[in-house]
Amino acid sequence: MNRFALLLILEFLLAILANAQDQVQNMADLSSSEDSSQQEVQRDFRYQISLHGIYMVPDGVQATDYSRPGFGGGATFIFPIGTLPDIMRGGVGIEFVNLLSKSHQYTDRSTGLPYDQETNQNFMRLYFGLYVGSRGTAFYRPYAAINLALHVYGISSDIVQKDPYDPTIEDTETISSTSHAVAGCDMTFGLDLNVSQLVALDGGFRFVKSFAVPQQLGEGSVKVYPYYFQIYLGIRAQGLVLP
Image (tube, rainbow, N blue to C red):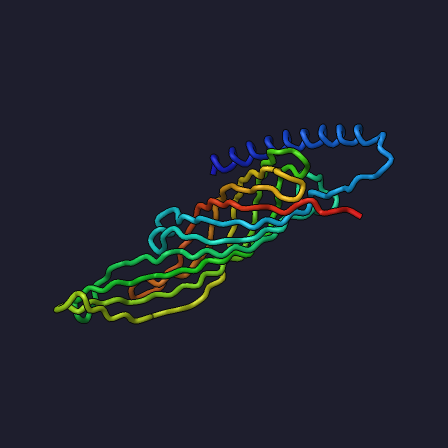
């Protein structure tokens, strides 16, 4: 966790520098507009909506034993929180990732024949948390976030047994197909590029942790505590017009 803390501190310092850049730019814009008799349109960059694609990699034995890297997508809404400084905002979001199946081989105790158990996972996250980072007109806007989440797993397990006389013939039986909701959290580090008043390019990575996920193992069931590494890339809508 030390490296995570160092990354968070680095992102926080970068966000402070970017926020200072915003303040200087805003002061310059205000000074240049003092002589203008016509009021310009004012936009609020504190409210932002992002859509992003996700590549998620299981990390650690308890995650890689049951799934392989998969792709998905998500959306995040960022908003100001009361009297907190502009550099701090709240965020809520949703994600969906299809994790590719993973197979384990076991031996049937009654027949002595081998069989494969395939685990398939669909992973959905509903999360909320605190975002720290610049929200103004700077081009480079680093940010960091800590989120709490509800993780929903759709888990199905199939038994695949090959004919001992003809391996090309397979008998597949679904032994379980259930959904499980567990608690989770993540640490996010990102950077958006403020390419226009209305759109920014957004990307970054996050470390995701799940708690007490049920997994079918052979003849019994156990709970695992997997964690994942995500890379995301997308676009962010910004610049709400103020009345």
